Length: 424
Image (tube, one colour):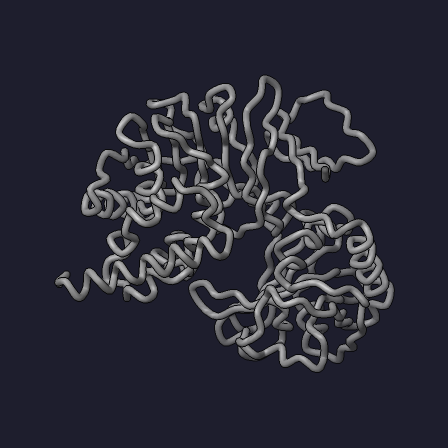
């Protein structure tokens, strides 16, 4: 029942969320601010407590075989991506990943009556619920279609903007083809295994060029152009669910050996580098390592496995269920990962991932050389000015390009594209 008191509560919660997003720097423009004030999120999450709806958290909406496959994204990253997208009245937009329909509703408000928003999802039940949510919000001008977003949606092409709200391993040919010259493609792109960036690409004649790169973390695209099965590099560990290790493509993992290392003795040592855990695992240091260390790995634990403490809680994951994780190096001789300083209670939920601290390295097995390399890489990243997403520049070329990179550029080859990375 939505009486005056309930309406006042909603208005107060929505106002507080918008002001939080502004103070965090996620909302930067008057247009995006006004949009978040105008489109109510609770209409896209019926049955969810208002305090949760208007918190800066994602809302899980669908699982398949126990795996989360759809959610309403965290408002902070939604605001960041809308700022990256730079929508204008009259724009034609294709969104891949309809979710609850909330993001499509925000975009419809931004492009106005003269614009067009098409949102596509692979699951019919999500499409139907998104339509209903948009209808209840008075935003049913959005076209919600069921289909494989990997193929785009040619009926309304070309588009001024194409946005993905799911993680992509590569840039599918259809997105390139259906984007107008000078148009913008925005997607959570997996640069290397586990390293995902929200990249806004502008389209030129020969390549796509990044104009904005931000850290992010999204569940991955499903469908015909999903990440190839033979390049999936996530392995479960131990007898209980929830514990896993991710590695770079092609790295061999003996699960029993890794689990044995984690269950055995370990030793911690300082690196003399100070950083916050968030920028290590999701930001600049993770990408630095991924381009230089083939043995880069990520450890994660969810649910009861997180409570057991077998994986160091270097960063906390606060999505659908409690989780924690860290990154490091895996080799034949052992394993080493980043941990918080020994005197800090790493199990405390009061510790934020944005808190600056000295990075310690925990070594398992006889990984002395691995530990030395990880310390040296952390120090080299620090000495290089701590390159991060903010200074990262990416160009995407068709796979058959004859472009020759310079000595300061890194090349990552995908199925359809070749990514060229450098820092400016």
